[in-house]
Amino acid sequence: MKIAMIGTGYVGLVSGACFSDFGHDVICVDKDISKITALENGIMPIYEPGLEELVLRNVAAGRLSFTTEIEAVKGAAAIFIAVGTPSRRGDGHADLRYVFAAAEEIAANLDGPAVVVDKSTVPVGTGDEVERIMREKAPNLDIAVVSNPEFLREGAAIDDFKRPDRIVIGSEDERANDVMREVYRPLFLNKSPLLFTGRRTAELIKYAANAFLATKITFINEMADLCEKVGANVQDVSRGMGSDNRIGSKFLHAGPGYGGSCFPKDTLALIKTAQDYNSPMQIVESVVQVNDKRKRAMGRKVIEAMGGDVRGKKIAMLGLTFKPNTDDMRDAPSIAIVQALEDAGAQICAYDPEGMKEAAHIMATVDMKQNAYETAQSADALVIVTEWDIFRALDMRRILTSMKGNIMVDLRNIYDDHDMREIGFSYTSVGR
Ligand code: NAD
Ligand code: UGA
Image (cartoon, rainbow, N blue to C red):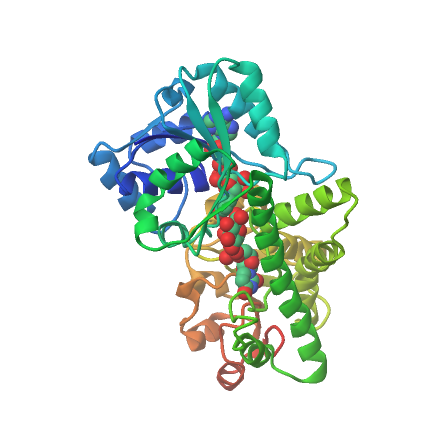
């Protein structure tokens, strides 16, 4: 089956590469010439574990190719839209201009019946508008518009795509449903459940899932604050509540607040949709407020751990990306933390295994180092912001000896309180 993927970012590239690995013939289209040129030369535009090998193998097998030419949609049985839907400046609603532009470009280049599948995360009703655009631009063609939201996580994207908990397909068109069954047949045979719903329902499922996960994280983060006040341990609370099957243990790790390219923008967009339909989502509104405040509050937590005054102090930060195993810096908590500490007069140096190139554009004043040990050298305090595996078993005695001070703030709870104090750190973590 020939598949065209419009947008070759995190979702488009991973989905396209995985579809080609199932045996489909995939062409990935992007407007960004530098991205396509890099891919044509075997260079990945993003860091995602396993992606390079997957892409190179399928390109070599002749099943995966890249282009900037939208004409590539001709003859494709399914055309996926996987372009960005960032927050619109000003009101926080999803900015749909890339989706609508892609829809227009696809319609202008089709020469026969087609199934157009929206994989971008879009507010309820967007599929209706995409269909309207298609009908207007290509009135004589039989085009079905399907919603197929994507649930992969960065850093685990290939595994999530190939072993999904469910595949949601929103369409009322039986011919389109047959095409979607064929697209996902390899996963279907592996017993990944296909959930067929109405298109609007599928669009809403995506927001419901992300908002719920963001709520779960925010709940445990507030619980962590309470734990600190009452002398309880949030990791044990999390274990104790998460082992109830009705609650589940995942997404109950307390930390500096959720970030990334999705939870922050998708919670905002859901709030806007709910307001537009006069059906406010007050829980999600609170989640957004609590999470926004939390990121900067983590800067204050560091300042307090350092005695209340960080002017002229050197602070070493380990991890800058919003989570490990990605180079994505979008809405990373580190941005607010660096800002808060610099505002208070501190000098920041940092190391991140994959995020420093991207981070350098956002935090130009931060002194980027080559590894964790170099970062800690002569620092007054060490702050762990992202739980990369490489930070989990550092030689902490060596680190402490090279530091000027002995303060450590572990915002991901990856070290043991008792062990760190025994080594000689003045150790603070989250909710313990
Ligand atoms: P991204 O910014 O990494 O990639 C989007 C790409 O689309 C860019 O390369 C851009 O150049 C390209 N593009 C824009 N308009 C185009 C057009 N008209 N023709 C061709 N290419 C075009 O975005 P992303 O992170 O992959 O997210 C894409 C969508 O998927 C968003 O709606 C997002 O919410 C959703 N999503 C993302 C993730 C994730 O982990 N990143 C997971 C699930 C869902
Ligand atoms: C998230 C969802 O998990 C995916 O299902 C969804 O497809 C994606 O958004 C999307 O719509 O784009 P992602 O943002 O890649 O995926 O990463 P997550 O693993 O969900 O982490 C998001 C943030 O929450 C990170 O900052 C992470 O550190 C934080 N988090 C996560 C916690 O603080 N505690 C946890 O227990 C889990």
